[in-house]
Image (cartoon, rainbow, N blue to C red):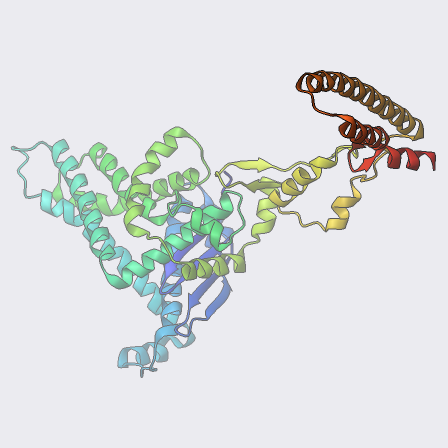
Length: 444
């Protein structure tokens, strides 16, 4: 499976999709209409090639994703603000101080404080808790391991708690719609509601898997890096966050297009966690996700390039179509040809299909064969008449013998028998007409 390169994010009542330098956010408005906004977002790695190196590009991509994510969340929330609120004193001061760049400044501060809060809760808090354990009781290695397990437990607990919130649950449903739509395209199917519905809501390149992998790698890193001074341990935890994020990004990036069994096994924990951060969407949510991806991605060109004329069968396997060439003398195969054409989704008129077949039939028999069959039929009829005469004659003799013994007068019965016998010889019935009628037709 070749990665499409599409990234995405669930927002308030919508989905954001990103493809290279283009993004689109589709939101289901309160009136039921789907609003789609498109834009461009160039990466800083295009201007500075050094920032596009492995591991470093992961750090840059993570920060840029956070910035774009906050922007899209703000944009989607604007559709549900019933009353325009008056800006506060802080907003007025920022607008006066930064002018048109006030929104960017606010967004930058939001991302910065989000990162600081995440590092404090998931990196520093576990270390602070474990620091109360005396190393004379528990060795340094065991303390580092307990710290890592505690970090993972805090992260999983956080995800579980927010997944119980009603509003967040709807966001997770849109998250599922985003994954299912991308999976649909990357598995060679057109993004229709029915096709998307059948796809998995789990994806290896998900941000949930990325965050969990950060937690897992941090356990290994902080086991290997031994620092005795407590305050220096806090510094190391902060400094190693970008490195761990960069390594995690490279793994997630590779896992998105790898079919390796080892990569599949390593991706399992992240996929399991997506069971909490994604929910099965309804059809309206799927339509929103499809509208978003179609605004930034030419999925038809992607399918043609990577799957050719392959189509998805109902059993989930890919089947390559082939041109049907049916001999003209095999007319019964027309039905099979029509069925196969329908399977690959090619619409053809009845005239085009019928034109491929020759429906003319050769005569079943000629005049000579008809005459020979007629002669054979007359011969069989003559034999039947002869056999009937013999049978009747034998019956007559037996009847006379019986009558003579009983003494009955058979003169009148003999006369009636002669008349019937004459009629039987003249009219021998077979099929729908008599021999006389059939022979008359043949003579004419």
